[in-house]
Length: 163
Image 1 (cartoon, rainbow, N blue to C red):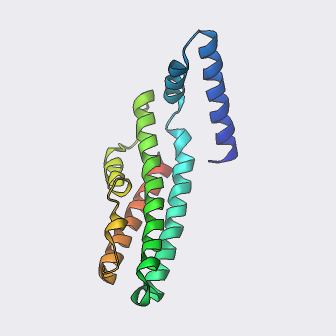
Image 2: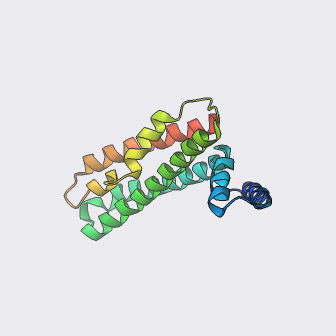
Image 3: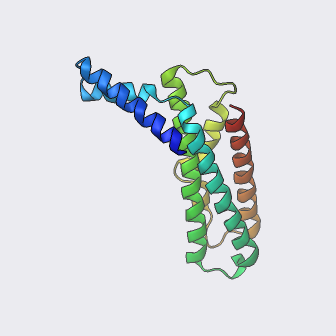
């Protein structure tokens, strides 16, 4: 998150807490109010950051695929695929946050996030796709998964920027 976004979110959380305490609300009620106070826009910058990191991880994976894949050990492959799983999960979580926040606040999106959320659920839930790649996966299988992941990242980045 960019520093101004962090400060804005922090101020909003504090405002909600103080208002809740003054109104005699319980900690649980204040927590619910805070969740409702987070708008989808607060997640756009972190989502773009997660997408950027995932693109970097994917580029690293593609370099590995071209240079080392054929002679790589099981451990090396698991490391690359595990890193991509983590990056995919992070982007997926950002889209979950965006859609939950939109539902909680009644936010009207310019573009419906439902399809993207469904696509990202596949990458964020277990078993995660990169976990299905293993020691015996062919280069073709890995390339196809990388390509599918890259297309979803591009689509997601465009969606966030246009929203």
